[in-house]
Image (cartoon, rainbow, N blue to C red):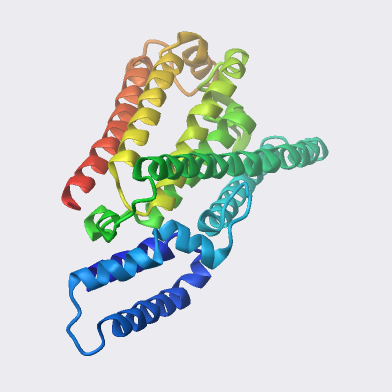
Length: 337
């Protein structure tokens, strides 16, 4: 019966992944025994099922009995997700720092010792920050999740009914883990680029077949002022992707949170990208000096137009991506109903 499956799902989703299958079998067997004892030779009706489920109690409380209630920063229902995301974030951060180290060696081989020291400093500072931010993200999810559950308890006044069970997740409304993981890796790499290697983000200049310098897109004198702002924007993006992974399906609450985060990100990106001081004011001049372009040539005019319009196109790209993230979530919620 669907009501029983909904109850089993509501209980087991709050338990660690390794325990869910065994407890689901045990719970189904327990419900079946209780029904047989209650009904005996008669036919099982929906009312009988509701009486048994009411006797077992609200799913969260039963899940607490299975795992034991403790004080924790990140609970068992989130811990498996937390460990997986933490591994992804640490690996992605390490990879980004490693790529930055390799680029430094390619750029300036004689300074390999200095580059190695910089690499060690980046690892020592970057990995703890990645660990702390991931832990903060899941602690926030845990806190607000518990707060929401307490509010539900106050509203229900312990009058839980089987009809309050959440529906089984619809395939069209599910969030694939690959989507969330890709988003987390993207945000981690963006943070790493701006924090550890923004000076290498530009046009690489070679002379006589050997690397000489980088003509940066950003103005290094000003971008440092925006690092914290950039870190927060992408950091909340990581929290958003973590929520998608934890929920496992699109809900209106998740769509609303995604909308709030994306709107804040859009405003932040407009402030940052539209600020002329953040871009390299000598970019076109440096291209001429490097020999890549000749002044007033057709190529120079084309690149100049692209450079002048880059801000607009970046804003359009990010605006479309962030708005589509909201719209896609809303569509999935509608389709899953």
